[in-house]
Length: 250
Image (cartoon, rainbow, N blue to C red; front, side, top):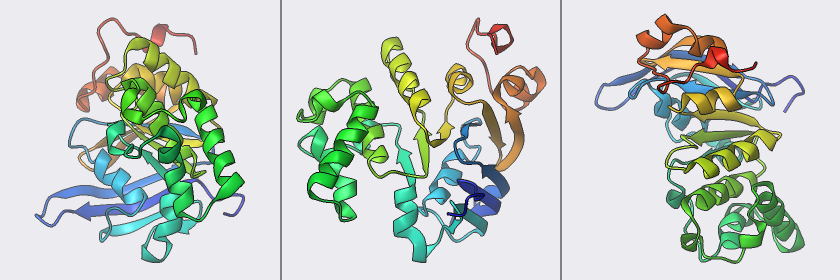
């Protein structure tokens, strides 16, 4: 990665599914190293399709995606999938080993890490999410919020360039939601957060991008976007009852 390469550079990305449904129409998006960006939009806006292009799960459209200067394409897929860490909405899609430690070790071991280096990588990732003391517990014995934190650790253990979170606050109780926010805020990593939780987006991401019908229709300060009533209405985005972003301290 050259010093000035952004973490993510999407240029002119257009994609249609085999059934003819056009999901993306020339998306341009640049995220600099260390930025935290919320990706907003109604269901069907193209958010998932865009995310699936970031690590090569979808391809064959028009345009390019670069991660840390590396073109997302077949020759680079192994490295791209290490650099783009996706945390799924349901942690049970990511946790499948007998213990928490085994789950977090799975990715690094798969790329050749072993012995003390593997142990150190696993313990560091678990410490970052406050789950080191649970290393030898079976994942299915943990609460939902704890499992989500372990799912984040499985990705952090790969030392990715960019952390992509799909609805990270969904199904969390208020305490777990706050704990995860504290963890995500503490991470020194580029972050793209796909969410319908607009207060969470404001809390964690200074910048927001709205995708609508496969096109970026807004890109700027999260606070300014959430307080633009006409923009919000036009893109079917609604703030929770009583939540006023303008009233919160900057």
